Length: 147
Image (tube, rainbow, N blue to C red):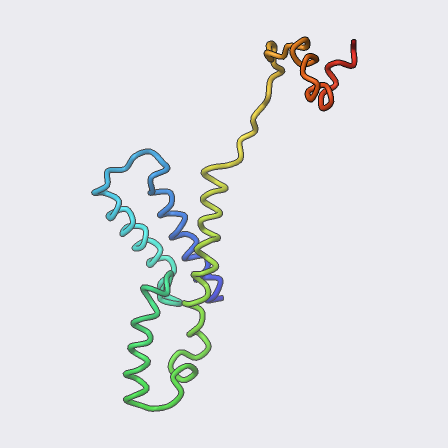
């Protein structure tokens, strides 16, 4: 449950930051920090109660490791299982799955594949006489078959 929550939390963060980014209608560069802060605040309010919304090992793992070192020095014992239980690996692995997933969702939703309809050409500039004059063209093309 916590693993899926952290994957979803990170995916929403990266999709939101990508939506704020440069590929969309221009946002004043001074407002981007406020929008990202509001996004992190909203994600924190939605996902913060259960796991503390790790979202990024860069933001979450350092303080956890410092706390674990002080806790281990104070109480002793096995830090990985006693302090974090089996949760310690989720803030490390889940964002690495959620990040690319959020980028992929943004890419698929905001930049879908566009179908390009190719209309038949009216004037291709193809000159059959010039093609038949060149021997290598006649070997590859079937332009001289009518002659």
